[in-house]
Amino acid sequence: MTKTYDFKDYNGPVPAHQHTNPDGSVGGWVADTAFVDDTAYVGKDAKVFGDAKVFGDAKVSGYAKVSGYAKVYGNALVGENAYVYGNAKVSGYAKVSGDAQVSGGAEVYGDAVVSGYAEVYGDAEVSGGAQVSGGAEVSGGVKVYGNAKVSGYAEVYGDAQVFGYAQVSGGAVVSGYAQVFGNAQVSGNAQVSGNAKVTGYAIDQGKEKN
Image (cartoon, rainbow, N blue to C red; front, side, top):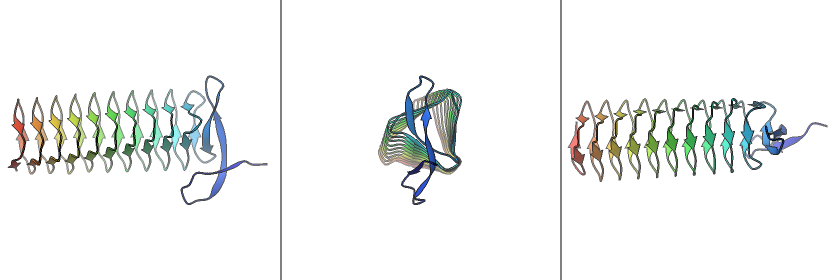
């Protein structure tokens, strides 16, 4: 008899199985439509469903979920209450944790970390040693890379880039084709838009640049 499980995605109970982890332990539920490699780990409370794929030495732990057409691979970790869905990809040594969500066509790779209640979506890319945390939102065609940090309730969207050792925090907004890099800090209620560039050791806490 085929086993079923309700992933609470409004599709009701679907054919599914519990993944056997590389260490022999019984892992979380995986829909029969999804794929989890024998080398991958799925924690007992984690779930993989839809047409998602988890392969390589990737780990899905805690109460994390991977669904849609999302892919988690390499040595990536999706843990705690994180959710990766849509066509998103998490790879390399990247980590998605907390209550963070990565969706759409977004990619998180390298040693990047997305945590807290952060959301990365659209076609955004977070890579290198970059960190997106707090309640920050990164979307559109944005690229956050190097050792950059986006935190607080900051929003980065459009085709903006944040890289180097730059930090965007507080309620700051970076949009358009703006670039924030070097050791720049954009915080408070600052807005950086258009084709603006903020670099060096600049600190922008409440001005609008475009």
